Amino acid sequence: MFSIIYYITVKVFIKMKKNYIEKLAATFLLCCGLLAPQINATDGYFSNGIGIQYRAMAGAGIALYLSPLSVATNPASLAFLGTSYDINISLFNPNRKYSVSGTPSFQPGTFGLNPTTVESGTTAFVIPSMAASWALDSTKSLGLAIYGNGGMNTDYDAPVFGFQTTGINLLQLFVAPTFAMKVAGNHSFGVTPILAYQSFEANGLLAFGQFSSNGANISNNGSSASTGFGVRVGYLGKINDMISIGAAYQTKIKMGKFDKYSGLFAEQGGFDIAANWTAGIALQFDKLGIALDFKQILYSQVKSIANPILPNLQTAQLGNETGAGFGWEDMSVIKIGIHYAVQNDLILRAGFSTGGQPIPDSEVLFNILAPGVVENHVSFGISKGLANGKEVNIFITRALSNTVSGGNPLEFPGQQTIDLTMDQWEFGVGFSF
Image: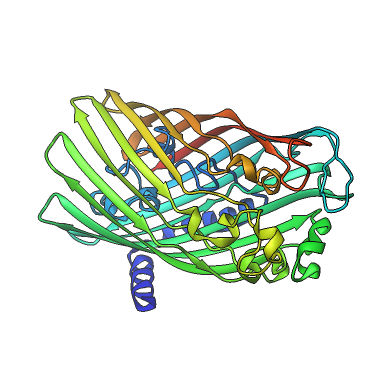
């Protein structure tokens, strides 16, 4: 597999012209620098979509080929793109808060919280992404995409558990070389080896040291990094001029351990990236196109994300294989998007996605740190052609407010209620050439 990565990467850089190498390197450095704060997403902690054109349709489009960044969803799309380049920048405005009602009992063996409402302080993040595709011949193409993902981020300017200000910060960056090939003219298959980097930091969790297998590696240790590898494979088929279908599967990305947080996450600091799959159809009616996707994210396969707080906190220490986690369930998402060609150089886009958020009401305590409870998104966008085959793309997405409520599982039943609330705005602009 590593020989495949080497082959693809070498071929990509041989194919690039010198000026595009310089542009790609400069943008990559910008990407690494701006990703440092944190990015937010709302299909749990997965992005609602990758690429401005797809975000404008609420992430729908597994059966479309609109941008080289489409390989982050379906590698097979690359075979229909030819040679093209895409640079995007987005602004995320997530608004997250938690509320606690009910007076703690202060009884031995309980873990009560201060009755209060606190909003997460940082509410603006800038994130770039970029991609390129190169047609090798009439059937084979190579590509390279760099993009980010995240969502488990909070910055509470107040103590939550104990006496220290509290929050976590998860960052993920993916480098995705891709090879795609047409088969029988109108069908294609693609494969994307994924090189992943992530870092994590937690503060204000020392109160959980009594539950940990390693209390020194549970909180306030600065950033801890890990790397890993996975694969995404995809298919895209043009059945006729009206109907296209697509499907893709991404393996679980096996990541290294967060050593500085081996007493917090299950499996001694394990935090793999969940497997997921998407399937969909696209219909074209003259100037109007419709895309419908179904996506499944398998959070239940990652112990540090899926392990419930109870009974695990009673039967195992934090950091052990069955140590308590965030208790997330698998997430299913339906996305529908439309695009309408007003004229040859002006396309309007819109979309809606909905999915059952992954946090059960029994898991609200730990998820104060990661309140990814949004379920519905509404998106709009415009693509305008410019001179010399260039295009500017714009999108805006509203992640509608949602609240999950549940009892504090470490207090007497009915003693305290915790509400997790989140909504989000997203804006972005991109250039294709």
